Structures are given as C-alpha cells and as structure tokens.
Amino acid sequence: AQKYVMAPHDYVREPLLEVEAAELNCDSLLRLFEPRRKLLPNRRARRAVPGSDETARKIEVVVQSGVDLPVRAPAGGGAAASRPKSRLFVEVRFQGQTFVTDVKTGANPIWNAILELGMKAPGGDWSQKSIMNLNDEISFGLYDRVARAERDERDSTQVTTRQECRWLGGFSLPFSTLYRNGKLEGSFPLSSMPPVLLGYEKDGESSSQALVPASALRLFITINPLLPPPKEEERERLTQRDAKMQEFAQGWIKATRKNDRYVRAFAPGADGERTFICRFVRPQNPPDDLRGSASQLLRFVSQVPFLDDAAFDGGSLDVWNTSESFLELGAGDQEEHALLLCNYLLGIGKEAYVVLGSGIPEGLTSYVLSIEGIDAVLYNACTGRSWTRETLERCPLTSVGCVFNDKNIWANVGLSAVPKELSWNFADEKHWRTFFGKGGFPPPATLQSTQRATLTYSRTTESFRSEIEREVYDALQRDVEEQRGFRPTDWNRSANAKLKELLKRFEEDAAGIKPLSAGEHDSALERIRATYRMVGLPINMPYTDRSAIIKRVRETNVFMASANKIQFALAVYVHAYPNRVCSVWVYAASLEDLRAGARE
Image (cartoon, rainbow, N blue to C red; front, side):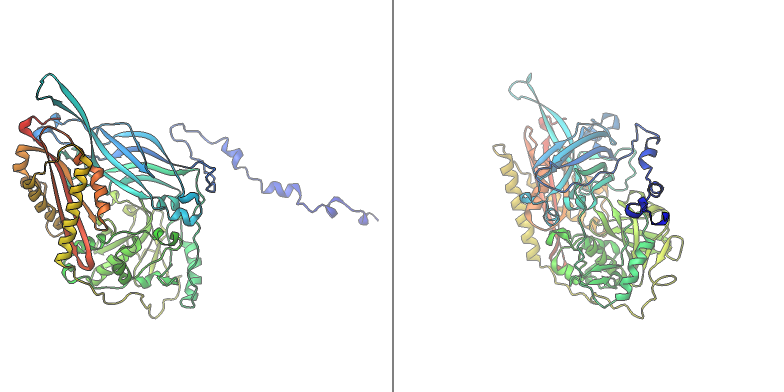
C-alpha cells in the first residue's frame, strides 16, 4: 500500500536541489580570490541602459598620451638647444560643448585626463533610428599654446603678453561609430595633420618618413551609461539566388569567426537583396589619365567624399553599392571606396583583395591589399594612405577578419589578427579557411558579377574647377575679415602667389607623380621667410561644400594671430578629377615682420 502514498516528488514540480547545485555558477566566489593589481585593474562589464531623458548620459573621453607629436622648430633655424618648448593640449568638442586638457610639453606628452561631454538625443527621441541619424561628430584637436611678448612702441617699458593657440592636427569621430562599438580604445592617428607645419618639425627620435611626424593620440572613448547595442535589422529581401550558399555561409562564419573578428559572406546590395560579396569584385577600367600607377588611383578614390550609411534611414542596413552607383552618387563609405580601388588595381593587372576587419577610429572597416611577389601593401581607400611591410606597425587597421576577391573568401583563423603579424599566404590552411574549396562550399561554374565591366566617366571642365576655386577663396577671405572684426587684415599678395604654386606641388606629391621634398618647399619660401616669421599650414580635403572648408580653416586659428605689423597669406588651389571629383587645397599663414621685432 505504500506505493500509493503520495511522496513530495508527486506534487512538487521543481528540480531537486542537488541538480541545481551541479549548475552552480562559482564565478563570483572565485573572483574574490583573483589577484588585484592597483596599477592595472580589471574592467568590469557594464550593463546597457535604454536611453531616456530621465537618465543623464555622457560621453567619457580619457586622453591618455600623445605619440610622436610635432615640436617647435628652433628660432632662425638654429640648434636644437635653442628650440622653445611646445605647450600642447587637446581640445574635445561635441554638440556645442568644448573641453580641454592641461598643457604638457614634449613630443610624447602624458595627460591622463578624463573629460565628460553631455549627450542629447534629437528631439528627446532615443530610438535606434533617431540615434543613428545623429550627425554630430566628436572632434579632437591638438593645439600648441604660445605666449607672445610685445613692447609698446610709445613706451618701451610696457610689455604685453598674449597667448595664441596654434592648431597642429586632429580628427573627427562620427557618433554613429561610437554607438555601434560601445567603446573605442587605442592610438588614433591625427588624420587631418597637414603635410607641412611652418614653424614646427619632427622630434629627433621620430620614425616618420614624411615631412611631419606620424602623430597620434592614445584615447579611451565610451558612452556612460552604455546604450543598448544597435540591432541589425535584416531587411534584405531573401532570394532564391545562392539560397544554398547562404545557408552554408551561416555555419561557415560561425566555424571560422574567432574573437569577434569581422567575417561575412553576404551583404545587401542597392536593391536590398543579399548578395555574395565576391560578386562586387571584378576588374574595372580607371579613367584614362589615371592609369599611371596605384598611387594615382588611390588618390582619385580617396578624393570621392565619404558618406556613412548612417546618413540613410538610420543606417539600419549597411548597403554595398556598385562602383557605377558610387561614382554617380559622388559619395560612399568604406566598402564602396575599397571595392572601387580593388577593382581599379585588378583592372591594371595587379593582384588585389578587399580586407574586412576592425580599425581605429572607424571600427568595422574595409581596406585593400595588393601583393606583388613577396611585397604586400595595405591601402585605406578613404584616407589615401598606404602601408608596406616595414610600416605596418603604424597601420590603424588593428584586426583582420577575412579577405576576398572575385573568386573566393579567406577567413583568418590564425592565432593573430594584427596585420604586421599575418602571413598573406592564403594557401596556408593553418591561418586561412576558404569559402570555396577543401572543406568549403562547392565552387560554382561561374560567379556573375553585380558590377559593370566598363565604367564611363565625364570630364570635369576647367570652368567648373576655376569657379569652385574662386568661390572658396572669396568665401574664406570674407570669413577671415569677419572673424577678425575691428582688427585690420593686411593681405600679402606676393606670398599668396608663392603659396599657390606650392599647393600644386602638394597635389602632385599626394598623387605620387612627383615627390615634394622639404628642401624644395623651404627654398620656395626662402625670400619671404628672410623678412617674415611665417606660421601656417596647408589643408587638403575633398570638395563637398564651402562650409566644411571654412570650418576647417577656422579651427587652425592662423588668422586670429595679432602682432605689430602682422600680415596674412591665403592661397586656394582646386585640382579636378573626372566626374566632378575635386581636391581642395588651402594654404593659410601669418607673417610677422622680423624688422618690427617679431619674437616668441
């Protein structure tokens, strides 16, 4: 009869205590016995908090240090011992707020400054679409604070000390990039650093091969409290084309992705359909007058303006456009720039690939790899910069996830994802896993490309080029005179002409046509600098509108200088490429008469 007596397990539907104990998580207990390092504490994972106006949200920036920053040149070209000390600080701007660090000296200063910038959502709307449409940028600028002493001409005993803030370089980080990644950390290159800084030079220990140092800022940037990560809205229309390949790709990516490396096999095209990424690659013809070298092709592609997908419909779909659509639109993001450059290199007979990975400051990004024998070159098609095996340690690409061309995809399954530590031998199965081939998907007989075999180009007329050049010059001149207000603005027309000649040489140097040496640059300004102390810099950017150029020139503070008998020089040169792609150069300089006792 005992078998009919109800026991607790007959009416209690909970698992036994001993079964629960088998799944006990002891992480919190073990954490108590972990070694504690006060100088290098472990960062705790933060919990994301949905956005609302009730929760104060800030962007936290830790400015750690500077790397290979420019230093002031010795007065009159003298010995290094006579060099005045640079007094450097970093300015951070976001949504109308400005914060600065303390002043530090040297080419590798250490700030360790924590800056907080309040954040507001557009119209109080904290939805993903609204936040991705936030077009504000986090801007970083490196400045040198200069103290100037002036004597009153009427009373020699009166000395006035003024402070100037000279812009040396900087970069801007789209908020959408920070939102996608949650946090960004590492060495951020000063991408807008000009090719020459009048009055400054490289430190004696700089490893840069250019006229200016390879400067960077070590930063940690995050949102506090952390926003929930954006959800990828899979709105691509499913298609029967490559259906089996899509199904295989899901498992292949899971099997090959290590440590959250950027690996993908399909991307949405302009029609919203999932497209195999190898279909975006094929040899394409560059413009006839740019077939000379890879440097000229890189220059042309980099001067097509950058436009993030976040500018379209909240960036919920990362659309990959064809080269034809990219050139017609006249703007695109990393993928479009990289695909066009890769296709151009293939079109002139080079071995080229598109590299997907993570970089600073953009996060997920696309580069181009070119291989000639044992030599490998990485290109950033958006910035126009390249790195060989000897300079890869300075490349902002921090992780390589996969590489692809028009025939296959190779996922990086090796221990390292750092470019300088990689072997680009794709036949090495220990480091690379192919999509087609051994252990992969059966290769199809043909892969029909989404790209047109032949691209057509329109010639940019001289009247269009000269009109932009004139409009930019007039707009800058008016803005400078308005900014200076009651202070007189004396333009040195002779210096303007000299600087414009140099701007044409800067474009030839950037395109790899004819290098510009420091000696040639200094020789061109030798007569002017014999009479005036020049402080200034050339600025280059793709043409989008005049307001972007005016904003960049304002940031330099060159035209805010004040001194006895000070003059200014302003030169503008626009170089036209096909399809109305224009490279705008501006040289801004202040000239202080040495005969009037100009000094620092």
